[in-house]
Image (cartoon, rainbow, N blue to C red; front, side):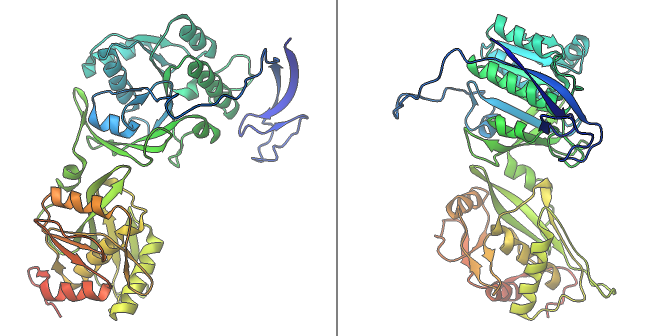
Amino acid sequence: MAKQQTVFMCEACGYESFKWMGKCPRCAGWDTIKELKIETQESPGREQPVEIGDDDVTEERITLGVEEMDRVFGGGLTVGSSILLGGDPGIGKTTLSFALASRMVELGFEVLYVSGEESVKQLAGRKKRLGIKGRFSILVTSQLSDIVSAIQQKTYALVIIDSIQSIYNSRLSFLPGSMSQIRDVSSRLIREMKQREITHVFVGHVTKEGAIAGPKILEHMVDTVLYFEGDRMLPYRMLRAIKNRYGPVDELGLFEMKKEGLMSVEPSLFFLSERSQVGSGSTLFPYVTGSRPLLIEVQAICPKTSFSFPKKLSIGYDVNKLFILVAVLEKSLGLPFFDRDIYVNVTGGIKVTEPGVDLSIAASVLSSRQDAGWGDAAFFGEIGLTGEVRRIVNTEMRVKECERLRLKKIFCPRGVEAVPGAEVVQIRHVKELYSYLLEKGCPTAGHNFR
């Protein structure tokens, strides 16, 4: 029989207590703790442990046929998986969801699209405007019970809920979008659909800090967390996997937003498409994200300053690491940077956190300071505090990407094998890098080497 239990829960942060308090001890919110009655039912039976062998259980995947999307999902949609999709307002989350639903319908699967924010006419107009093919079911509701009833009455292969913050349980005395509602709704939906092996996508709002709104436990409960990123003024979008239980983490897919919808784009060619005539302060870095490398451009300028404290700013690279790297260059090479501002930019909106970009950053800074270009050359390697260049992971993958794009020179640590068609320059210390720049760098117009 069902038993009723009374607890008090904070509607702002989800803190639970067995007594009422005027101030929440976790988030310090006043008058946010509300009474909540929970019905608990005894389990009809107990689950028993089972033994599984190597061939007993296999993952069943649905290959969508969209290269960039399949790559981010780890080879296709895993049947019964739970996916959380976040992104800024207007970035194209609904467009991406429609494209996913349309592709599943083309493959012969039943799809249910649940909208808690738009009407049927609005969704039908958007579907027609994007030229989405195929017919799939649309349910406009904000009630949790309506969604549970729909998936119990008919078998679906994919359910998309847009958005999870708009769905609420009428039995809870909390506003839709509150921590308690999101936690209760998401846990109930995940449990119901995993029992039926229904792949489901939760579209989530993001906060002003860029994180998905709601409790952090929501990201722990799902199998995959995706972020849809990009500049709304530009047609390009990036789909990044922050968490993936069925594939590589930090995988990146690139799309172009066109009139007919999202189209896959070759990432390396995209990041280099705007690269003009190679001058000083520009280098290339083979960045490994997920299971593949991307060739991105690293830019730096070092203008002289008349102020007592020169600026050091970076976009896409940790500014604290930039301070350390400049100090290493000053100590190892004896070059003064006290009279120069340093600005570093990793193009394409990519944020690089791996230490392998150190050599590319140092080469860009030295190139700008000496006003000499490197040409079409790629750089990768970690720089230590004494100026030595250390090895990094995935060197073979990076070299193959440089060879595929026909780069002439590759500057890297020791131990990297040579490849046909490209000159591999092994660097042991930043002194060797600086000497190479002075001897064989390409001076720009008006340049004075020394």
